[in-house]
Length: 155
Image (tube, rainbow, N blue to C red; front, side, top):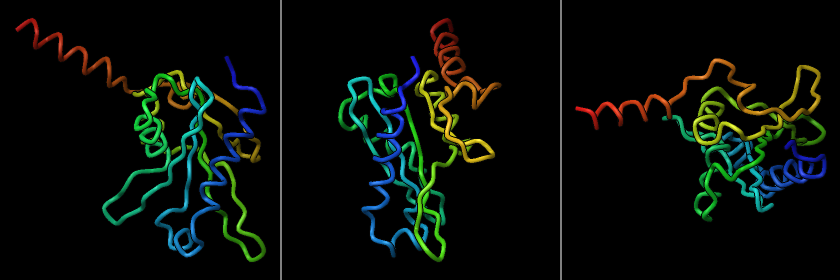
């Protein structure tokens, strides 16, 4: 079941509020410039921010999923995900929805292949799509992992 427009806007607002609450000097240097929010089946919203570091660091989406898990919500119980980024310009530090990177798409697919994701098209129009649509030829890690478990049990 696709989320309604109210749920979509509420989730986007939560992600923006998380980013807005960070000190500007933190977001300006890029350490925390993206926030994400996910919606659970029981209507709770969990947020997270990216942690950029020269060694890599997690994107905001898995941090939000981890926040949900820390509150006892399984990834399979998440319905909807969004990420936003602060867009710096001369007049206003606006925020916009951004599409998940490839690593985040794969992580979401592995954890909950039915989760919906708010994305933007080339015109900037927000759309809700299932993560399966974002990875039409996804590597299915769970299937591979389960196969190895079966092979070990047979040996």
